[in-house]
Image (tube, rainbow over all chains, first blue to last red):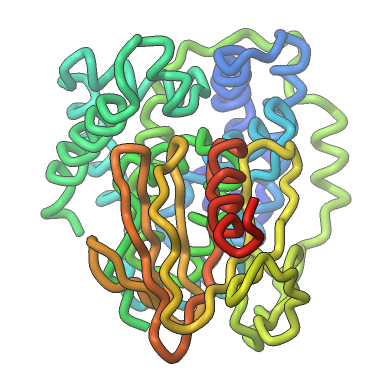
Length: 177
Length: 214
């Protein structure tokens, strides 16, 4: 997938974009529906997400490795903007990349694929109480207070489950940094 | 800038998932503009979203790749990236609300040695404001209503958890009580976000209370 995005980024390759669209638009639609959009709105948001991938691919073509997070972050920001009607507060502040780039490990596509495989393995093995918190926030769009209400546990418990889940994820990819 | 206090991992996870209340997100975003370490953490956390998105069953599209999309692509002109405006000491993400320089901020006096500027968010939920506390001033003890994030922009403050300097972020919820004291010479200028407005207003009220005699 990263390769398709790179083709879109490097050459404005329309056939790569078409393939990307066919792969991701149905998933993004499904993501938007999980977040409470009706099917028509979800499909429009999915189209818009992919269109922005096209634009961002041009903008961020110099950035290595982060291609695979584009689609998620763009979909997420659109959701905050359109479904929650809030300012996303997520766009990379201009200048942040330059500042951070010295410390970033060079992410080539292979390492990134390996990282995602490991994250996937950790997520699959999380105890169900931690997996619930991760899914409710990333997929259902609930805030920490809403998750506390839904699961009928104190806020501190929600936070510590989230913290524990991330610790495992961080450990799993530590040697790839 | 050496930053020693960062948001809690859970705060960053909710931010990466896109579900942190708007005022809290604003403060985290401003912290990220100052903290490469947290930028890396958030990027790692976004990977969770990528993996989960990948696992979602696809929902059938009612139309194939829309012609509209392809036309828009053809018309697309590569956007040019603006030069970051590095002048100024307000974090870039907050500049559309506050301008670029702390010295140009138009303060509203809350009491002796305490000023603030209330910032409006899109939804109006929660509370976001810039607070300026004079040198050596102690803030009254207060409980936190839900999560409260404080990002230091100038000067510093000290409490039971340590010293907070520019770039540092205090991530506290209602389990904690603290008594911050502003730097004896520099005072402290910070951005404070709270997910709940009512308690925060009480906190402001309590700041004013001894001074106005209400």
